[in-house]
Figure (tube, rainbow over the protein chains, first blue to last red):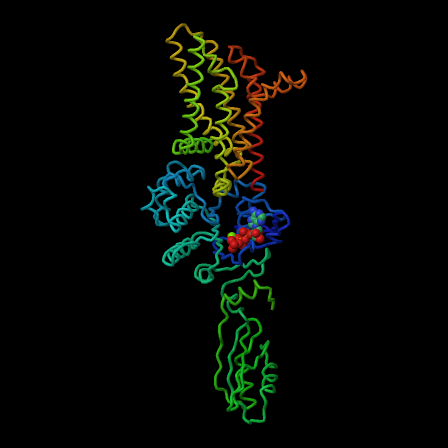
Length: 324
Length: 239
Ligand SMILES: Nc1ncnc2c1ncn2[C@@H]1O[C@H](COP(=O)(O)OP(=O)(O)OP(=O)(O)O)[C@@H](O)[C@H]1O
Ligand SMILES: [Mg+2]
């Protein structure tokens, strides 16, 4: 173990097979104290399975998970004491009253008897469930269920929150409220959350893991993954000095410029105007080089702008097997 | 310890909120009263034997049917709804979960047995009652119910389908109960083996006022083994 002490989650080569299905394959990552990590991936990618391994609910077929320096398989109770977990779909004891449920969780979580009432009050207020404390859980709307499940995860004030699709089933207003809550929580806690809503990750997380078909395909900051979208894409419109210059000649000249990975000739207009789409290499911005090339070749530059790649682009590229 | 008590208390409360508990206890008390008073007045004896003696139609046979039905939801329901994921990711042991659920169900079943004291008092008012067999009879019923409850908890961990778990539980309990009645049909070696494993056979002596340590040990071992297997099975179900 490479025991740097600020890593709250260490996943070392986690694999999980269900019969012949390889749900998770050799997934490794570390999450430092204070990070808010978004866990993305298409349906069936292995997000839930990975989280179940981290929480000690599932034993991995291979590899091991370490929470706050404690190996989950070796000392599950000590590992679990550090975390709050919102399982996918917010399973709750339907026939219980919300307040009884929270009290039960407080008892099982070992919250000191003297602290129970105040912890219950704090999380009820933060999750906005004060009004439904006296209701049976079965009567709650999906959004309120989700809040109760979140309150349950925060009850013992853990350092680490593992949230599997915390905003699924919520209406847009509630999504924004829960997102804000997660953002606030992220100031004091380490959070790993899975979601299918990409803007949510950009709004709340400072790091993104993308898993596809059981394998980790990205682990970076939202900025880096956003910029990397399709590389930066530059749209360029220019008019060569003479009509004898063909679009293909211009294209090959552009392609030679530093920082340019690929050039597409989109259109040749009647008045000799050429339109190109240019992909940059990685995070290099090729616009200066393009401008210099235009000056050197006496092209009249009519338009040049950079389109920022989106997280959607990156996500689609990484999860549809179109490796760059 | 506190955790076991919390779980037991919560399960007990859940029973008192559920129709199935009232239906089962009602069936037990109603059925037992019918059998008990019929035999009492037909035979005209001042005796509690009808309450304790195992037979095809008896209070203990009713328990063998009803306890598996009552206990089956304990773990199977949590598996079906997914709350097992909460329970097993709390920092508590699988053994604490099993013991808590076992004790919660046992509390309900002992409460039902306690209510049969009403029968005892009727008999006591009718004439002189020999309290020795009453005491051993109740000891027998309690041990018998404890072992069945443990078996029920075990079966409850076997499937997330309550129907499947209940069918296994009811067959196991009734099988262990009625297998004793077959021993006369079997060759003697097999016959005595069948008596040794039968959950009703060990009730006979106790119902007559005789405490045999082998009977007590039988019930305690069945309880312990069933609870151990339940813990194993629960641990494996989230492996
Ligand atoms: N209990 C199980 N038995 C068999 N296969 C399973 C089981 N649970 C999950 N799988 C399979 O493992 C793979 C990963 O599933 P997982 O639930 O981890 O995906 P996910 O990323 O959480 O998906 P989603 O976004 O739909 O929640 C899928 O192929 C799924 O069918
Ligand atoms: Mg999932």
